[in-house]
Length: 299
Image (cartoon, rainbow, N blue to C red; front, top):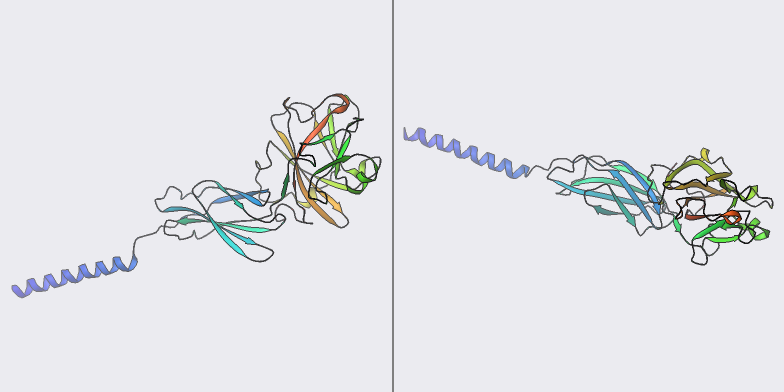
């Protein structure tokens, strides 16, 4: 009987030892986490603003946030940043006009990446909110005898410059002007300089636009297709609106294009068309790609 008890104890000890070794070899379980979805972006000055639908794993105890890997497509150098739970992150310290590939993984608390990732290619763009005098970018309609004007969105000094809508200066570097058929028309028209009586340069506008009060408020996965840049003008109604309007455009310079976005802001009267009579005007905020043929996102 004593021998049988010894054998039973020996078997029990062996089982405990085996279980113990198995637990030590596998360690604690780190459940997989899912990547975010619907990754979109917007261009800011020296920055890319990312927006996504949060991971469905955010409620897991081992969810550790997000890892954003940023690859410079020009020099193939990369770096990464971490973001907490939530629906987005702004990557700063970038170069305007440079393409970046942003890859977003979800992470566990043990620094294990999600098996898949969300990915987007985008480029920061120069932002201009004031003109050469440090004032709001105000472009008067053609009916104004004292202030009728055009704009050079990005002059030789990198400034958004309001210029006269007349003479050689306009023909050489005007990017757009504001047309009004009469002093009482219920709209103004942003037009390509090539449509002016004094025939300037050519600007194309996309048929894609959206309503917003901020250039950072709209996120997309791609820029408008090149096939949408078919218009030479955009009509702005003088009716009141809940928001301003964002317009996509591109400057044609020889065989190259320079892409931009315009925010037509609302005044205190809730209208994008501001001023009165002959001296009506539009106020603009500009996002400009100063590197040729670089749209806001990969086509």
